[in-house]
Structure formats: C-alpha cells, structure tokens
Length: 552
View (cartoon, rainbow, N blue to C red):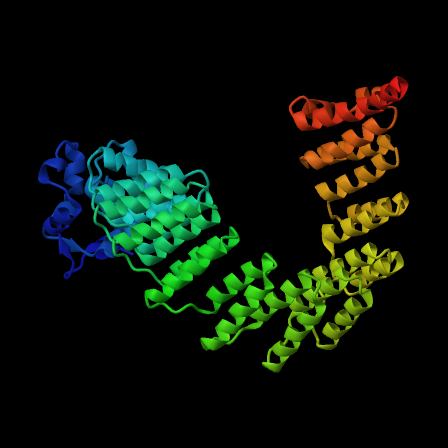
C-alpha cells in the first residue's frame, strides 16, 4: 500500500484543526534539523488532510520500511499514540510513548490521558498511577475517565487501597464525582480490607462537597460496617443519611436488621423494622426470616412462632427458609414433635423439604438419642430423590459415636465413600474422635493414615484430639510426635492444644516430665500466665496433698 494514498483523504481534518485539537502551537515545532524539516513538511502541509486511521496506516508503512527517511515529530507521535489507543493496540502505543520520551519530545495532556488509560488496559497499574501523579504535579488536565480507570485498576490489586483513597479524594477536591459503580466498589474494598474509617471518610467527604451519594454506595458502607461488627458506626451512617435527607430503601433497613440480629440485638432489630414501616417501606420475606433466625438461635421459639404467624397475617407466605429455620430451632431444643408438625405444615403448603431441613431433622433425632429415627430421615430423603451431603453423613456418624454405636458409624462412613461423597477433614476427625473416645488408638491412627493417603490434610482439631487421647493414656511420646508434625505442617496451636499437652506432661511423674516439655510449649508458657499457672498447679498438687496428709 502506498503511504501517500494512505494519508490523502478529502473529508478529513486540516492540519491546523488537527494541531488545535492536539494542543500544539507553531512555536513547538521549531528546533528540528533543517533536513528533517524539509523531509517532514509533507506531514505538516495544510494542503494535506487525513483521517486518523489513514494516518496510522500510512505512518506504519513508512516507519516499517524506512521510506524517504522521514523522522516523526511530536505531532506525529502524539497522533500515532492516539490512533493505536483507539484501535486497541495499547502495547504499541506505550512503546511509541517511551520512544518519544527517550527523544525528549513534548507530549500533550491528551496523550498522557490516553497512555495512562492504555497502561490500565495492559494491567500496568503501577506505571499508570505514576503517570497520573506526574500529570497532577504538572498541573495537567486529568480527564474524569482516567481517574476512574486508574482507581478501578488499583482496586483489583492488593495493597493499593491507600492510593485509591488518595486519588478519590483528589477527584472530590476537583469537583469530580466518582461514578456509582466505582464508589461502591471502593467502599466495599475498603471495608473488606478492614479500613472502615477510610470508607466512612470518603463517604462523608462526598457529602461535605455537596456531591450526591448513591443509595448502593451507602448500603455498601453500612453492610461493611455491620460485617465488621461496628454497629455503632453503621447506626451513625444511617442517622447521617436521615439528617441529610438521603434516600433509604428496604435494603438499607434489612442490612441494619441483619447486623443487629447477628449481634443478638433483637430488640434493636424490631425497632428498625417498625421504623421501616413508619417510613412507608414494607418488610419483606428477608426481613422476617432474618429476625426469625435470630429468635431460633437464642432458642426463643415462642417469639419465633409469633413472628411466623405475623408474617401470615400481613399476607407474606412463609418460604422454605422460614420453615427450615423453625424446624431447625425446634431440633436444637430437642422438640422433635414440634419440628415434625412444621414439616407437615411445610408440605401442606406445597413446599418440598430440602437437604438442609432433612439434615436438621437428623441432628434433632441424634440429640434425643433416636438413631433409628435419624436413619429413617436418611431413607426418606433418598426416596424423595434428595442426595445426602457430607453434612448428612458427618451428623449421623457423630451421633452414632455419641450413642456408642461404633460399628454403625463405621458402616455410615463406608456408605459415604460408596456413594462418592467425600466427608472431608470433618468426617475423618469425627471418626478419629470416636475411636479416641473409646481408647482404640490403632483405629484412630488408621483413619489418620487414610486421610493422608487421600490427600486430606489434618487440621488443628484432628491433631488436638489425637494428642489429648495419647496424653490421657500416658503416651506423651506419641503426643509430642504429633505436636511436631502439626507445627511442621504450618498449623498454629491454640490454648486448647497447649493445655492438652501441659496436662499430659504433668500427669505422670510431674517433676521429671515438666522438664521434658517440647521447646515450643515451654516458650509459650513463659508468655501465657494461665497455662503457666495451670502447669505449676498440676505439678505441685501431688506434693501439696502429700504435705497435707503428713501434717494430719
């Protein structure tokens, strides 16, 4: 393709229009060598006009073949960068920009904006941020879209929240309102990174500058504060929204109600629901189910049933979550009869029990020691075409061991494997705990080996269970080996683990064994007064008793 034909277009911009759009002045073109000026005048002539895409094609042909020895100037570089960016050739645009800088050529604010966005597209956020900072320092005009692009890119990187806060603050100072999606994402990320005060600060800064705040952003902030268990902060944000006349919706209230219920502040949740109604917002099924769940968690079944009846009166049909919550609540307090009553009501309403409800019933029967009833539930769910989960089998195994039905627990474990249901670390730990409980350490260790062979790493509870059993039987050597293995696998022991070993090492020949504690435990004892005092108490108790007997 001829480069001349590539740039001649009768309906394109004239050079003067082009220069004006690109931010160049005539003075900026001085200072080039005479030879370059003569060869380059073809690019500058007002008699030529071109479309951007045509110029891009023509210049690439010339540059690629070295025809005529033409050397591009600032205008050409800037325009080529623009064309590459518009065509999505970001890496080539960045290469040209670097080449331009190496020749100490001037670039425009428009090009800087384009390059920074190109860097964002290429994922080079560190350099994009650097370019943006240079633009701000030089007093260049920074496009709104560039701020958004850089901030959005930084939000995808860990450890960049400080930069995000600074750039959004810069936007607000310049009177730019971050778009709703960006602002909401920023608030979410800050809250996720436990930087709740920074999130509140940005939100308040928007209000202070008279910029509107989207309801989704406010809700994200309240949700983040509630998740961070800062109900006081969430309440203050809600109060500010009311005082500033900001919009509140049912989501706002539901988030607050959920936060209160998670903190067992049901009375506050009820007040919020009432305030919601006063503002003309109707509580929905989520609102009721949230409070219902809180009542059941606290075993307040009478209040839960009253709320369920209230739902029906207000024309809300309880759903599978509502009934599942009630059934689980009754199973928790060992009232299987009531649980089955609501199971029947659920089915009468045309709803079908799901695996969560069946698992709750299995747990309920297990709590009252009715293992045959739990197995009947298992068979019923299979007949209904509902596949048992690892939770189903783990619950059955747990309650079977609880009832000392060891063979039945083993059978259930094998059934889970036959049905290709992986019970995971919880299931294996239940089996290990069950055999440790009855003193069958060989069986317990067999399941530990099975875990390893299946690539299931033991957790802290698995190790602590085994160590406790070995210490209880006086086999501190095996307990120490397991403790070392636990540390080498990167698991951090807790006070229960340390207390288990301290107990074991102080039970047999206390004064001698106290000096044999693993170095890791000895180190912790010097920093933990409770454990240290417990060890001293266990070591000295036999001698104190001996002295007391002698004095009598």
